[in-house]
Amino acid sequence: MKSRFLRKTRDVSESMYAGHNRALIDLAEKNGKIVCCYADFPPGQVGEVFQKQFPDRIIDVGIAEGHLISSAAGLADAGFIPFTHCHALFALGRGYNQIRHNVAYDHRNVKIVLCNSGVAWGGIGPSHLAIEDFAALRAIPNLVILSPSDAVSAGKATLAAADYAGPVIIRLPAVGAVYPTLYTNDLKFEIGKAICVHEGEDVAILATGIMVNDALMVAEQFKKDGIRARVLDIHTIKPLDEKAILSAARETGAIVTVEDANILGGLGGAVAELTAEKCPVRMKRVGVKDVFGESGTSEEIKQCCELTPPFIQEAVQEVLKAKKGNVASKKRKTPRR
Amino acid sequence: MSKEELVRDLQAKAMKLRRESLFVMKEMGMGWLGGSFSSADFVTALFFYRMRHDPKKPQWSERDRLIISKGHACEVFYAALAEAGYIPREELKTYSHCGSRLQTHVDCRTPGIDCSGGSLGLGLSFAVGAAIGAYISPDEENLKADVRHREARFRVYCILGDGECNEGQVWEAAANAFHYRLDNLTAIVDNNRFQSTGPVEKKMNMLSLGEKFRAFGWETREIDGNDLSEVIDTLDWALTVKGRPQAIIAHTIKGKGFPSLENTNCHFIKITDEILKTGLEALKG
Image (tube, rainbow over all chains, first blue to last red; front, side, top):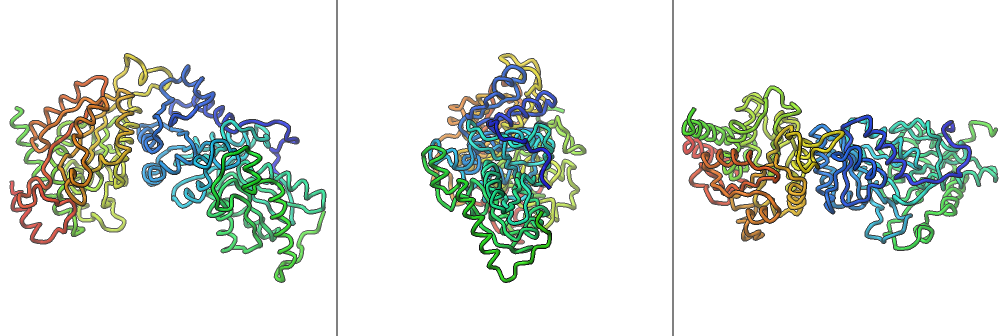
């Protein structure tokens, strides 16, 4: 069933980082254990507020991402709840062993915010465009991986992360980029529970992060053509909402996954693993097809990495065609409304 | 108790830890004998002289932290934990067996271990984070104040290997420790001059680690790390330093206490019945 927390229109856009920062300030006011850590990364509004009100609780470690993660584990041992911030690719790359060893293995209460993730922001070139994060982090035990889709859910994800006793990754897109706000401020966000943002029985589009809005646009377009696409906001990559995904597989028989990440091992990989074992259906993964990003504008990059709505449409048409041609496909169980 | 008596007591304790750690190593049949034995003296001084801790409350929030960054020389630490009462002595027999609380690198599942080891180069950063946490005030400036109005809630000790200092992250941590004026942080480098596959200056010549820490702004002392009198004097000195972290470069002998292995590359060796017998003979009280 479609979430009741969806805004009626998507006429407001905001940066997810701003939503995350507001939540951090709110948290810090109520909880003296919240500490924000940065590896020479702009703190935004948190910087202004914390320097005045909680000056000890904002730490910059310099350009030292490995140290950022390990020292956050030490802060957690001292009784604090640290939120670390740096470029996604450098937390992942320079801090991978640290995430695995200091945070995940010792189950430390550290929240690692991957900033500027994905390729869609173009910006400062392939060295900074993380496509590997979902795949690499999924394989580490004990981690919760959150991938919110708008400023509201980014704030709620932050609150949920603080409440959760253990390691959490929060993946955010470009800190300066704005994306349509999908949800109302009273959104109920539960780790591991996908949100249905569009109902449908013909095909399921499972999207995450900034691609949820694109998936919604595609579903709305298909509705005009009489094709009803279910769209799920998979805001938790790990643990996956297996119930919602398997229901989608069973009830629609066709799945498209959409992510601003490598299609190898990310959301698409996770869904394929699950459905292949428990409910095999026609599937198509939309995302970065195992290539590095590029310098360029957001529009240029989304086009060259095949992340625009037409590519999602094409994928939907492909799985629908394959579903029709599938000898084993089930007859419609629920009547069209 | 006079200082001489104290030193004699600690020396006897250190011998005992070496003996016990040999039994621990025998469980696996292999052991990091060199590094366990070289560090036994300052490990003894930390556990039984300097650190503020309570074996009955391993998670006491205000305990001094001990970060064993060179997490492979675990055998002497397990011996120390048993001797201090964190774990029963019988549990030492479970070392290296599947499901044991005593894993083959120090592990947080063991009461008394503050940070899992094994991945070299990470521990000093963890220690810096903990030391910063000891100074943070939730609503006002203390860590960052020019003049701190509150003492650190606890001290942090971090033991590193000399070879471990090849790892770049050690120096990220060193810079941060000075920048944040962590005078509640003492790093002890077990400078036994051998790393896994050979002598440190042949594998990767880092020149003087003491000068390096000094260059990073640490108050640094170089001592005979196997002389307990010097060790306790230096640990006392560390408490007096204000405004800067302290580095103790403990010049030690790899395999100290096992004469036929001293100053050889006994980093990780097979513990045969012969080695056990010879070692116990050499370590007779």
